[in-house]
Image (cartoon, rainbow, N blue to C red; front, side, top):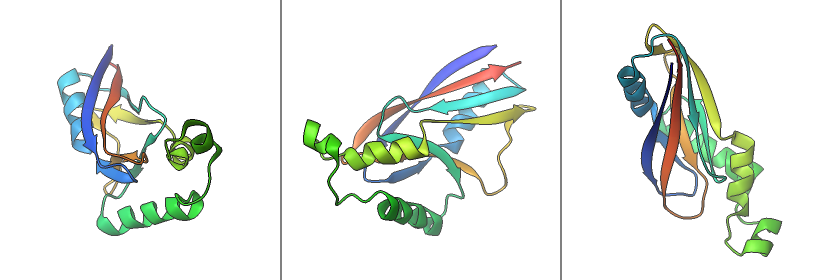
Length: 138
């Protein structure tokens, strides 16, 4: 069985990190699928999905890491071409990646005790986002 759903988010941009674990769990529960995989996918090139321990210290650490590795205050060729000022957002999203797959066993995501699924919006403005959740299994 394949079940495709979506999650709607309003984000602040600028490395806004949102815990979406409960929304993914809700879609899994409603799907009726007990064993398989769940993929969360971001259609777009300025956001990404990963897992972290969703607590304020680590959220700050992750945001600071992206600023150190891919700073907002340097020139990006994308900005020269399009003039939208979000070249860094595209590079960050490319590094993080647009999707995450989690095994589903007995109707539960196999996340660790301190592991949550998060969406990271790197864009330089608030956005309305739609994430795709696809559940495959039996």
